[in-house]
Image (cartoon, rainbow, N blue to C red; front, side, top):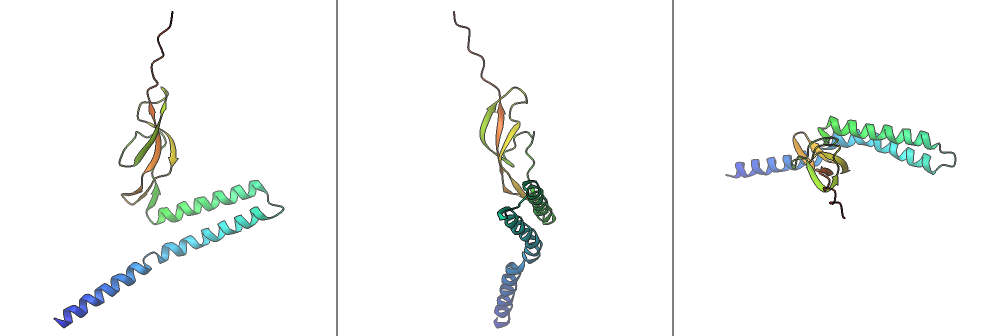
Length: 139
């Protein structure tokens, strides 16, 4: 019985250690992108900062973050022109329009994210709604 209890204790400690360091490689990937962001912030604060160069630098940092997240199975949920799907989208409003079919996503308010096949956070979207009929003519 004592051996079994010792085994359970050892397995529990190993699980704790694994959980504690499981994101180590993810964090190591993020550090260079974070440092690039820090350099961009310093450039913004500088007297001779070129706005176009700063925008380009921040855009590259965004791409790097998306690459790192994708490498770890974390991807944004596609919303543009998609049919509303309550499994992936959270409707926060409607837009009266006849340009697209009803219940089509027309605007993303907040990005949604998936990790592998599981939704981390649904995308907050506005969806198309048929416009109200025109008022009847008055005499």
